[in-house]
Length: 91
Length: 421
Image 1 (cartoon, rainbow over the protein chains, first blue to last red):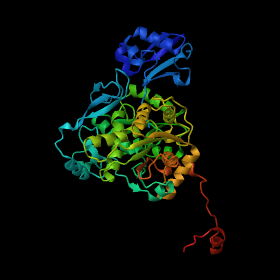
Image 2: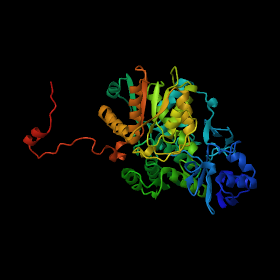
Image 3: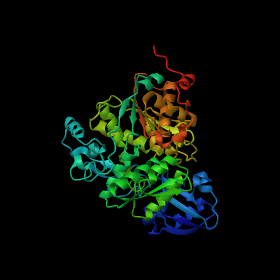
Image 4: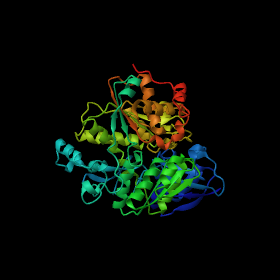
């Protein structure tokens, strides 16, 4: 499956300035791994050592927070959009 | 000036005082750091300086993240520019205390702000900082109260504004936003969807989203609630504060305000207040994590009448949990029925009509009192964040109206009269 990953501004310096990039994978975890393989520095920014997401990182599949889906194990359909965003308090 | 830099709450990396909100190293939230060591004022002088300041939040400008101090060239007059917030009443609520079997309860009525909620505090600070940084357009993602405040501040200061709200917001909050001439954008989705959209928009536009890229400054405005409470109690700490929790920012920043002033010796008190967070059962990710002993929150899809607290993915949740545990407080949740009863209880015993968020806070206070968590000798402050006129549907049909013809007979036959002795 080919997935379009949108990279937030705060991480673009670690991704050669890229705003979005296509990777392949069957699940969110695989897609993110594809991203880390391309931009190694992103791994430690986004994920903990055990592969889970850092607590202030939110990942959305087609606009839905993956924690409402199956988390990192969520299957990704072909052509899906994966958005990485910092968690922001609101009000 | 005491404001020093931005600092990551997680890894402590330092950043300049710009429109930044996320640590590039670890993605943690940034907050404002201060250095008060350069002040040569003793406690008495500092207190007099505050007391001699304007009757609004700019009296606390030394503790706010503004490079230029209070807005304008001369503090006292120019602080009236815009929509000065703060200096709201702290009311001694003896009848409420009596009803709950407590000795001393105070109501901090922050509905008495220009747009009738505490959000005017945070927006005043964010917008003033945005102007210092050269922004011409302000924006926000809002559950309602923030929408009112951003739209009004834009109007008062002559700045363009964009306000994004979830489509299901209360009509009163929509009307009290659009009237200010803002560009009001109603989004088909929840607040968390609106927040995600705005976080994406923020990256591509040169706008000051008060609660996103200006968030470190915005959040500091909530400290002024703590400063006022302490000043109004005669430079003393309360024993306990009950505060509504949505994102967790207000809750943690009130504590930060008490902490900052305690460290400076401005306030006295033997122990730090117990901090009790209040959520609605229909959106209680922080209360659930508290009850389950977790230190992070699992996001939820909100379904509650307390829409101003309907943030299912609270970014400051971990800090709120830590604060409640560290101070011997708690985070509790109450049902929609309890929220309605809370609004009524506060109105009937204090004359303060609050929106649903205040119903949540009052209901949680009732719950704590009934559970025996509160020592009867404690001095408790109940933080009421918004006005009841904003959520009228919540109280519809909650009382009886006597309908009569215009005659004395009709009155006497229908309305029970009070028996005076």
